[in-house]
Image (cartoon, one colour):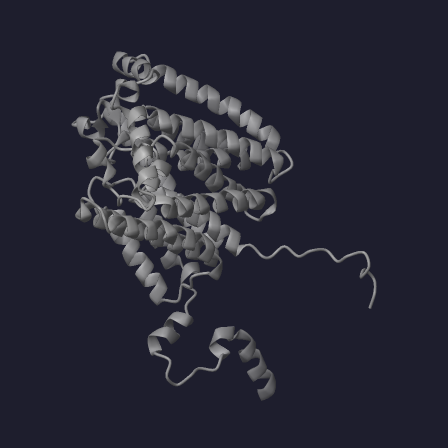
Length: 436
């Protein structure tokens, strides 16, 4: 009986508790090893709260940044492990930082380069953290992260709508040049921030029953898209359209359920009607209609001498004449205007080294992500993150996204899911089938 009892007790002991322990291992490491932190309710609450406050970025560092540093520190101390598979994209992002450092040695404004480099390093490390968390507990981590992101998206969109339509007292603080920005510094950052939660809500509409789809996720998607529209960010509009298009195409190629293709068509019709009514109501307001007409055309700063396009040509000439870069965050003062193109920005800042690193990180994520989207587990939520990411790096052609927080979140979700998936086993060859 004692043998049976001890055998039963041993079967209930976690494998890590039965491992031999060296005498010189610190007790803090043993404690962390005994906790699967990513799968705890504590982790879920922390991740949800982290994303729920992501819509407030009026100050630097934002509350999101402070909480993210604290959360990452706690998780790592309690045993969160960095998966080895993150090494390749991480090395690419380190190349970006290396180019910045080399270019920064001759920077005219060394203090600006130093601060930019520090922020870029922090952003890169957030990618590693999100990858590790999602890889360790994909279902629970993603549920918490997306839940908080939806909360932040609805909050930001509601504030943007209320401020733009005069529904909130003192709502002028929620606007930038009469465009909705909520608690962001810039409408052009606020708008793209809303694309992933909008796409997530649309995905939920294709996988949930009729009542949740129409009466819960439908209104959420409508509010977020209306808030995005009122940002009057042309980049955000294009980003949303491209991401929704990619989502529909990839999901149709690899549907999660038998009737998902049909539901996508139905949801497109229902959501289209809801958005048409919401946008139609919004443009009945004269101020909104006038701003829309203005934003649909080319702006004066796009085409004039010394404007966006001529400034990008000047930046390209500078980058070609300085193959190792002039240091990050310097071109704006030297050239008198920003590049409005993340690839050109990275090229002029860190030269060919940084450009190769950025294109490598984005390219790896895009290529491997597409393969996973066709056959990987948890395909639906993966396609949401993937389509949002592709739309974002496409928008990066017309805006600098170096330090956009949700860029690194989306990359972390994509790589975390890919690393969490079990390896795909190749079927046995015909020559070996049925043989001993």
